[in-house]
Amino acid sequence: MNSLKMTPKIVREDCLEKPDPQALRDAYGSTLVKLGEKDRNVVVLDADLSSSTRTSMFAAKFPDRFFNMGLAEQNMMGTAAGLAKGGKIPFASTFAIFASGRAWEQIRQSIAYSRLNVKIVATHGGITVGEDGPSHQTAEDLAIMRVIPGMTLIVPADAVETGQAVEAAYRHQGPVFMRLTRGKFPTVFTEDYEFQIGKGTVVNEGEDLTIFACGLMVYHALQAAKILSEKGISARVVNLSTLKPLDRELIVESAKKTRAVVTAEEHSIIGGLGSAVTEVLSTAFPVPVEMIGVKDSFGTSGQAEELLKYFELEPGDLARAGLRAVERKS
Amino acid sequence: MATPAQVENLRKIAKGIRINILKMLNTAGSGHTGGSLSSVEIMTSLFFSEMRYRANDPCWEGRDHFILSKGHAAPVLYATLAQAEFFAAAELSQLRKLGRSLQGHPSCVSTPGVEVSTGSLGQGLSMALGLALAVRLDQKPSRVYALCGDGEMQEGQIWEAAMAAAHYGVDNLCAIVDNNGLQIDGPVAKIMGIEPLWKKWEDFGWGVQRIDGHNLEEILDALATARQIRGRPAVIIAKTVKGKGVSFFENKVEYHGVAPSAGELKRALKELEG
Image (spheres, rainbow over the protein chains, first blue to last red):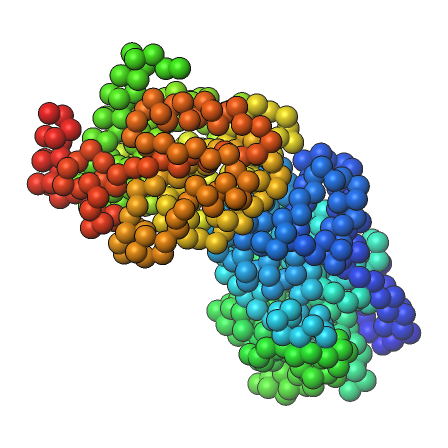
């Protein structure tokens, strides 16, 4: 066992010892099938990547409600908007860079400005896409989705949260962008966890520092908290899986309690989770903040594990940032 | 077939819409004159003969859907919707004004009767395709219409949508191209040629008709023919005159995005009202 104070019931108490890696996109695919069985209005679109995004599971079960739009992401987003206008609940999927980047203005005008009920679930986000390299990696998607008015932006931490977040997105009225990844993530949450749009979750309690994280970085933050605890620093770890709308109350409350903050994301430090947190804290309760993320650069080919090391996104990097933030406390 | 009396009635409506376009643009002091005037007969035929809708219940489930993909022609849409009583005609004088419903380009958030927001070109046809697929899934008889510009044919997304609509064989979708031949910077043929446009659509798998876009009988016939096309979407390439109806605006690229001045409005109304 470890010396952490992980939130009972909702966090797997042995998650650090037994990571139980699961693919988020598998959880997406199976949840889609569940939703498809429940509601005939659920329709799914993909841009020739259905076997990778796992929308192929839905396609196999409900071929008449699955639309492969070919390699045409802009038209896919527009068609999804039209389907939503016609009363359907469309889920549109492709890789995160193509979903967010190639079709950004279609998402802005056809979906968000029109306030249409489209769910964009993008897989292969971040740099852990790995070997395919910079063209297929993305450290920019969260920034460019977060800036769109009315967009709900979700980055689940594990497969359990992914399944719940997909269901929550289905129930939510309005556009949603959800970022999933290629690789398998350790499982942080138990089945007792309840995801809620706009709510952050304390996954480990601590007094000296708060680490705000999303995606894979939540697990890394727990590992960092363990490293820090061995140095006598107790770190609160908060899963901020909803980047928008942001849980301002929890951010400010955490800053007031611990007076030092680290943000950690598999994304550029420009415009993503770190920016969102500092936008709140700089006006509401300024404290020292250290930001972990991709430092304004493109990705590069390599294995996921190598890339996490290369881009300084490992638990040790988070822990060192924690020490710096604590040192900066006045 | 429309009777001569019905066509005459449509002609009167078209004239009223044309006058309202000019008045609202003059009051607003900015906006797109040429491409609004070129679409008047098409819009009149759609809203006062072809389409089923309920102005007092814009979200009526049984309605036909219209999307103005060439969103800069918002004035012709607004004048048509006001004529159809989606909202009071008095609102037309509030075009482009802060805090009012008639945005510079169509907004479904603020204006009754506007199905989806457009303005950034090339996006409307994809949304029309989505609507057509939704309607087909629900086995409803509704049809979906999208009015595009010819300059808009330069947008890649149009051809993505063209490919997909034919692939999915949506025969409840009808696109109309307002082929007025001009775009902001000059003649379409000079800026970025799109011809032979009919052949492009045909090669993409659509049922193509070519008509005079100011001849009401031809428009009504083409819309009726489009309804009969099975297994593929329909496109009507409507040859039009930019600035149609006002002699000194006709075929003038300068009036793509310029509103009539007070003097021009006076002269234009004199021409139209005779």
